[in-house]
Length: 193
Image 1 (cartoon, rainbow, N blue to C red):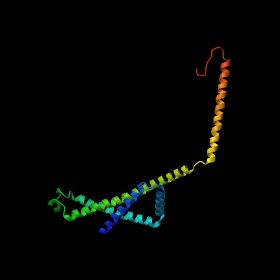
Image 2: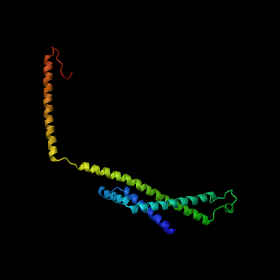
Image 3: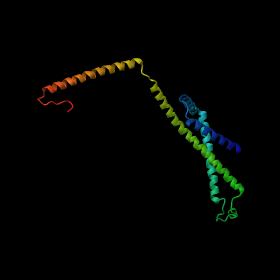
Image 4: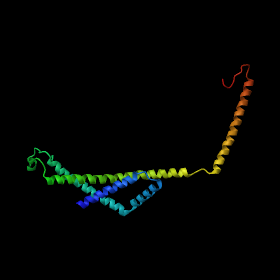
């Protein structure tokens, strides 16, 4: 039993380290390599079989712990006597063997539950980080498309031409305004009115 709990505790520590490395702020190239390694693991049939096998074993142990704890809940509160007529309950508490068994069942329940929960959390976080890496890669590609000097000169020339057109249009508007003002009768109306 201690070997089994050591393996579960090692799996719990491994999952915590994996989750920490996924959410830790690391440089983009390292994160891309990490996501590539995770994708290789996802496509590996041996890894899939190992994860499914481990999940099933931990699920079975989790359910076994729940069933054991149900048995102790039927015995009543372990510290105070109950009003049932069993000999152990009249004595006022559970035996030390029953208390130890209940403690081990609770410990196993918490550890296996944490391992199963972290396994689910890792897959969710991997999906989120994959999307983050994809969006960051797209952003880097868009930022790396620097405009060439020819394009910059082309646009500067276009801006100069538009400035000349705007000046000519302003002169034309002023000329039209003066012509309009000269054709109106004695009242002088400026364009500001």
